[in-house]
Image 1 (tube, rainbow, N blue to C red):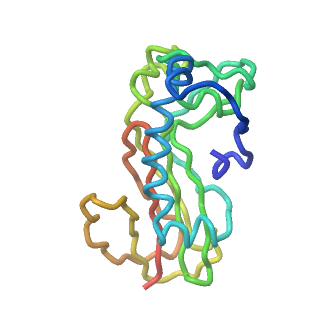
Image 2: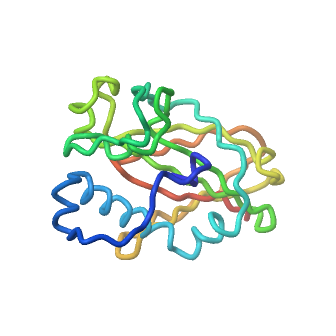
Length: 203
């Protein structure tokens, strides 16, 4: 979440006599969060993703021309909900604010004539039962971004859009070069509780 919100969610470490089973029983969200983080890390730990997210420069968020939003209920962020039906990330997103259901962050590498886009859908379909604030929109999402090469210190030219996928998954289709000289729309489908990393690379 710090990659998008600019701060680390509340967390800590301490010695405890609690067993993992007791933690899982007390916090029904635990297993779901672990699975989500595991899936995210499968993409974030790829060398090509790290070229941008770790060694690149966090730049202005791409402009979303189409994305669902939710007005997150106002509650104490230090006391995130822990019921089994609660939205996974309600303990991390800013309370009392309108939030997109898909976060989009940009990481520039002008030295590589590239810009990476990190996309995260933080909702799942069962969130609709947990909070009427979603209006039935939680779950699978789509997002459309309008970006120009000048937004990320890139020169107009011929580019390709590539995607980093986790090990063991089918490779994405061969990218088709296109002319990118100004604002252009890019649309992405986002399965529930998913992360995608794509990047635009000059040819």
